[in-house]
Image (cartoon, rainbow, N blue to C red; front, side, top):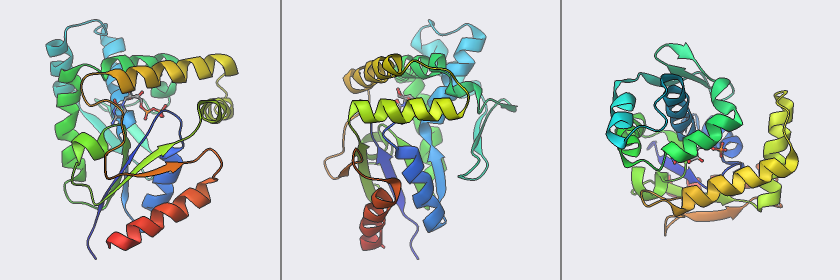
Length: 222
Ligand code: CDP
């Protein structure tokens, strides 16, 4: 059977990773969390003291780094130069930094090649902001997953609490909205739905219902 490229884009904490992982598991595909790549870049720039460096310096930093996504969909791991940074990249500091640095064209350019390589053979569910618009405009199936800001903030708050990370619910909402504004407003590869993406508002849908909708679309493409 043909192995598809499936693009799942949408704003922060919309539930993309939950449904993308489930979809990948169901199809026996690879799950690729492209946000983790931007988070890894932010973590590295922070460690190297390069967060305010010009674009070319950041681009070179990304090209010289060995960033890997390993593990299975249930236990994804992110390695930077051999170091497992899977937990470190989930902090609020890294969330905001990743959004800032992802607006830098040289950073996006350096990660574009890596993402296209990861999906080159098909059989992937790729979760991000510009997968259906820029990385794989010819993807076999495209989804734009969103939910109301309050719902997304509640989900992120619950997720952080489960990891033992203390957060203020109001602040989580403010930070998500700030990140969405920046991600949607940037000049290069802004967050937006591809014209041919299937939009799914998950505000009142549980993950099973979202998965069922996605599977119906994917099956029609196989
Ligand atoms: O998990 P969450 O939805 O909070 O964010 P993420 O998917 O881990 O992405 C973190 C940040 O990376 C986003 O706010 C974007 O600024 C950036 N990003 C991007 O620009 N392009 C992508 N394909 C994926 C993430």
